[in-house]
Amino acid sequence: MKKFRFFKFMMIALIAGSVITFTACSDDDDDPDVVNKTELAAKIQEAEDLLENTTEGTAEGQYMPGAKAALQEVVDLAKTVYNNADATQVQVDNAVVALNQAIQAYEAMAVVPIAPEALVGHWTFDEGEGTTANDYSGNNFHGTLMSGADTWGGGLPVWSTDRYGNDGQALFFNEGAYVHIPNNAAFSPANITISLWINAAEILENNRFIGLHSWNGYKFQLQSANKSFFTIATTDGIYDRDTDPPLNVNEWYHLAVTFGGGNMTFYVDGTQTQVWDNTPGTALPVTGNALVFGRDTDVYAADDSNYGEDLIIPLAWGGYLHGYMDEVRIYNTVLSATQIQSIFDTEKP
Image (cartoon, rainbow, N blue to C red):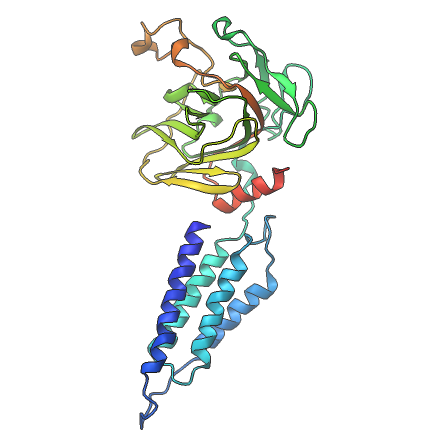
């Protein structure tokens, strides 16, 4: 949406500049140039047909709310150029360019279906009992509820109330409790999107809720200011990035992060909050380590004496979630802003 608003501003500025210059055109020109407005008329009609035959919303095939009003504003300015007898060919051509770019920006706001094969795993935590967290992606990456380290209290995940108030349809984590999913190459795509709902019970330095070998693979967490924070190991180095705003405790939020194409992008409640464009490279593959929910890695060492050789993180360097989690999705591609918004709108209370 931020990029779309920028395009709208530029298009309005371009056309408005043409409108302002009408007053500088002479009415006394004895031999005025013939101005061809045919292309502008066709472009206006194309935009009006698009507005007439599309619907705003967050379902697949619809256009993000607010997109129509932005396009309509550019159409209205283009009509001003078309209807003015004093418009020059340069001004008409500028209006065509502006309207064409506005149409392209509008079409980019369409909610594009997510390819089914892009979904690596989807864990809803709706089981309500037992020790299995099922994967509903069709890939059968089912997880097992496990107790944390004794040093942390040895907690187990607890079936709990979700953001809708439904009992047994979310998981509560504390004291190192986690969900263990055996390693698979699918968990290490070159590009990635992670989407989930989180509700922190307290602010911790390392409130880590998803991990694949921690910073040697990737980890998603809340940091000391309770901001969304993502770390990923890549072919160009390890990146640590976060985003405003700080989150409140005891409140549900939808968080998403994407990595790929040189960018790391954060979303909070469906809204893009930060784009880091200084993260080149692709994610490194992780072999031998399980994917975990509720902490940052599956295995910890007693100390750091052998870390330089085996890269097994000491327990003292690790971290776990104290709070609730629900609806975890992992994709092997970078989802668009409209796709993230659509997930949020579909799942929000």
